[in-house]
Amino acid sequence: PELAAWMGRYGYAINTPAELRDFVSGGDGRNEPADIDVLTPNVLKQAQLTQSDSNHNYFDIWQAPENIKVTQIVGWGLDTVSGFKYVGRDKKVCEAIPPGSPYIYCKTVTYLDHEPIFTEDGDETVVTPSAGSMATTTFYLDLPLSNKGPRVNRVHSSIMESISVRDLLGEILIRSTSTLPSFIATEEPTKNILKKLRIRVLSPVSISVTDSFGSQTDLINENIPNSYYLEFGEGKYVGLDTEDTYTLRLDGQDTGTFTLGIDEVSGDQVTDTLIYQDIPVTPDTIVTMTIGTLDTASNLNIDINGDGNVDQTLAPGTTVTTIDRLNTLKIIVSNLDLDNPNKKSMLAKINDAIGLVKKGNLNGAEHKLGDLQNQLQALSDKKLTIEQATELMQIIETIKNTL
Image (cartoon, rainbow, N blue to C red):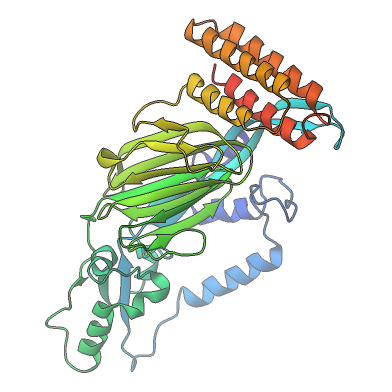
């Protein structure tokens, strides 16, 4: 409903200051979300907007004193968030009603999520048009190339540590700028010659990347040259260049399903995509793959119970099928701390569902999975905890949705 109302009010994009002001002030009539709600767009308070107007009025006309020479050094070439795209998503939600009750109910919930829009025209924090907005002497630093040689990850916050920038400052302050340092130009670059990988994963998993030198990029570290890690909404986003071979590792944080997507990008254009959608996962699951470019990507190796043995492999470019997901569910059920008769009965139902899918009898498979959910309902708060039963019910609901 929100998206339809916004498109009716603003069209498909908010791209003028007036529209942005209207949106952030709640001009569409929405209320300020609760503090714990990080998905619904906030509504700024009038005092904040008034201060913003005051800042703009001051800085938009500010000029440096005539006796001070101003030089701009602009970082370029790193993925930088230039906007957000709001999307409506559907997901299956199973919950005990009332809370703590053994009775579990499942429903489809539509919710609002947001995805970052990236451009290479920036320094990972500030887009180039903003960083170079003054009409004065401007130099551009090609960050991807300058990071590549010394194997560093200079970004907006550390651009002054770049050897090229320090050499440039020496030229400006002591000598002249007749000979520019490496990777510095007086004209903005037009296209990044290095290909990139943009990786996104939708929960409930964490993601970490290690390069061939042992450097890591994850929630805590961004040590791989030309890499980043960001979180928005339910998504985690990692960026890499294609100058090395990387090991991706996903660690389950909850029981549910995850989606992994990898875009190969050249000059801000997506040239190829790899996606693994709605794969069942548990808190013990470890998923790994190696990748340099999409052409050299390895199989996706899934260790469901974290025992060090690969339980399932998915080749790059193959579509994750309902049977793939059911086979993963079988492994999850096999690892349950459950009496043998109930476990055998559950596994039999999953095998029956697999057989029905292979025969094309999708309605029969859905009914068989419904029987499995009924069994879980009967075991809830008895042989299985309410949480275990609920999480398994939700995985099954997601699998049913793929039939």
